[in-house]
Image 1 (cartoon, rainbow, N blue to C red):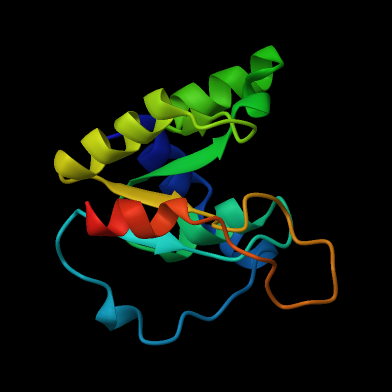
Image 2 (cartoon, rainbow, N blue to C red):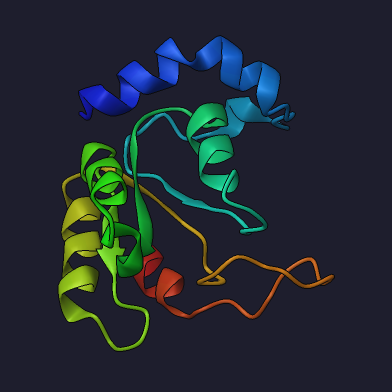
Length: 136
């Protein structure tokens, strides 16, 4: 359990719900177990906030390793339990970390497009790794 995640989620709950309006359809359909893979398209930096705010339970976000380049980004990624991967190569360490996280019964959130979608298309081509994580 990530205490910092829950502290931020509930401390900032009301202001974030006002700033980041969204409607979750069939929220009662979320599985009750902890092991949950949340998949979302990625249109802006706010998407991670939406996922964290509007979905139940803690989950590890999968992000690019470049997010740890500055000290603030490094702290946030550590504090929120993010798993950072190298998108430029087959990152076996990152993949093992994700699989072991799921085997421990913890959830992950991933943006399968691998980057923010800055096109007019609803979705870009997704990366194939998410299917492997779901099967494992």
